[in-house]
Image 1 (cartoon, rainbow, N blue to C red):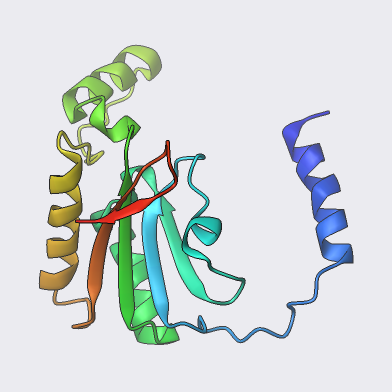
Image 2 (cartoon, rainbow, N blue to C red; image 1 turned 90 degrees about the vertical axis):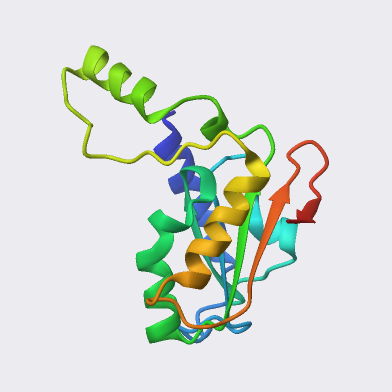
Amino acid sequence: MSVAAEFETANKQYAAQFTHGDLPLPPGRKVLVVTCMDARIDPARALGLREGDAHVVRNAGGRAAEALRSVVISQQLLGTREIILIHHTDCGMLTFSDEVLRGKIRADLGEDADHIAFLPFGDLAQSVRDDVALLKRSGLVLDVPVTGYIYDVKTGTITKV
């Protein structure tokens, strides 16, 4: 059975017990979480979130620059008034540079990816500080609390940066 077929089966079970169809569109806790797409992170469980509590934006590395469009929409149209940014230990973004990945794309796909900033980083805590600063200084982001954390994939704990 394909993974997609497994998901379809799981969704039938989920939908049969689904009781949250009346949740409002804006997140109840007025918070937006930006975090990495890493499969070892379950933001809802790690942060005690329930359906309807928060917007969660996930991308490679949990990078703020890539999440900016979603942050603006979340704030301007759906009323979020706090941002939580979470990067994590053992992140794949620590393992390459733009040049290395662009070279791999050229070699493997015969395509030019020079126009893409993949946003890797070499220092985990500094990447959190940089992304928090980006959000705080952006004229597109409201002046709201922005807090950065590092999630430890071995212990499940978050540490404020």
